[in-house]
Image (cartoon, rainbow, N blue to C red):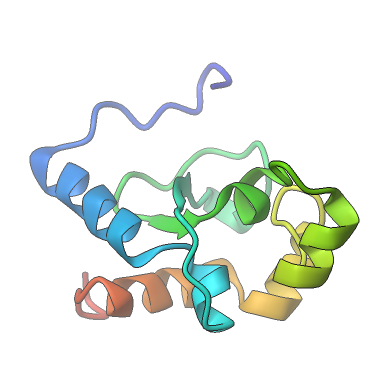
Length: 118
């Protein structure tokens, strides 16, 4: 992790949130009816790469492809064809396809059973 981007140690409630996110899978894949194991993605202030994280309550689940552009045992072209754009490789196209950060956060919160006010 880059220095200065840490959001500190998560609380017990935030760790529970992460577990719920992992149970429900990647939010981008979910929109296409797929279930892939997610990594925890921290949304940032302004929604740009490298900016300060909004905190542990502002997290969504993204699979390794959508989060980091890691195709695993496949190749990038096949992953993009199968799963759509990667947040790491094509952030603008990712947001056009799956939604802006606040939409994805609300979508994630609905999946894990949190109200919009959370």
